[in-house]
Image (tube, rainbow, N blue to C red; front, side, top):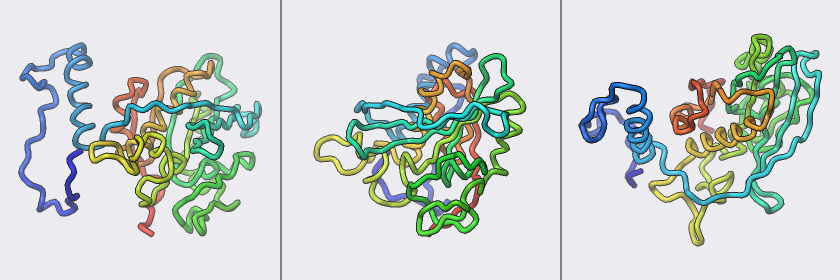
Length: 272
């Protein structure tokens, strides 16, 4: 991304011309799926990488996961519940991402999954008392019972109405969610917490101007969650991504496993 001062006033945006969606960089008209997949789609992804979301560093990180808890009869027998912790560093105390997964018990074949980020911890998407209460930093929010940047027991199910988990399960879909703050806490710390430092080169202390920011990190985390879901025999490769953070859906377009997606803001959040 260009290293320049952000513009927040639309009247100060200089003249520009948006690229044609179905005309390639060399002027070729895109008229079929094959040329879209192999020519135009990669070109557009490079444009988004360059001008919007930044480049994901090529440094590899060690990833491993463990099932922290499981139950075969969650939600009154409606689903199987798993809590899976994914670690991104061999060192104890490194960043981790907790995945909450519900799989419908009535399914007799692999099912597609609704996968999304949440703002207030996995425990906030349902009142299920067996969901582990997150101890991660969170934005203060009275409606979510988050105080002093920590969740409380009253935070359980704070945004349950936005997720409709029972309805999703009853219709034969699985549901998986991740707290976005596990990947990058939503406050300005110069990218010193979360996953960004794992990708820094020697002497680097923050992303380069052309590298990813928070949205790129959140999208990367959802892709890693999909890596885990691919190991579940009860789940198909098709995922309806429900990021719940504006822009994450678009940043995920590079992942071919995303069947469809939407951006939804589950609860207005303050700037404090």
